[in-house]
Image (cartoon, rainbow, N blue to C red; front, top):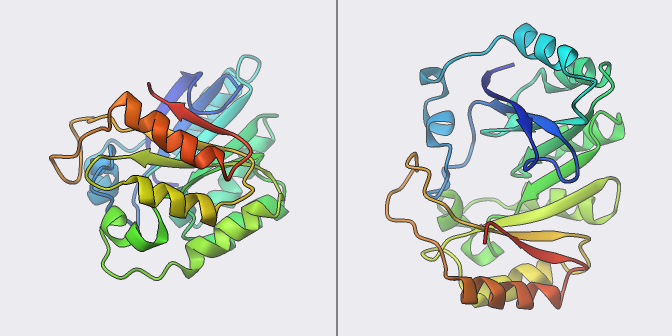
Length: 230
């Protein structure tokens, strides 16, 4: 496993769980607003944390922790991800996967083998605006759509989420996202924050009034819509 970050305690990354967060390196997208640009573009430049060191820390804290969030980068690019999660599950911890949804085969395998307990899938934008939002011209969205459809079938507890950027998202995009995710259990609009480590500079956040307006649009389509970061 290419582990380049490890937060031993968080109340933010795994809903209703005191958790640890593991950051993997590498991603197949180049979202201009990505706040972990170094992990995406040049993961080798980031400190490497041995898998055994992470597992030892989790074992020591397993009576305190309730779960582990595996994020990135894009975790499903790691071929040994299932084996690594097996080791975490043996510690009695729940596992949340953060994913961009572009590797449905890996996600489905983890769900079917009961290796993960929660999926948070980033829906970057409306399908019409996806390319500019992931930094890839004319992307093939078939795998993204496959992941969305699978989660909508209810095989696992899940959420969809969108980091909202003024330069990339409009009200029309949220109408389109709503139609796409119609009937979803949970959807979160995340306020963009400039981490100082972006892929593209000049990205900015929408104001509170606009975020509420976008949430109101999504509430017409999904069972629960909330804003994170206001």
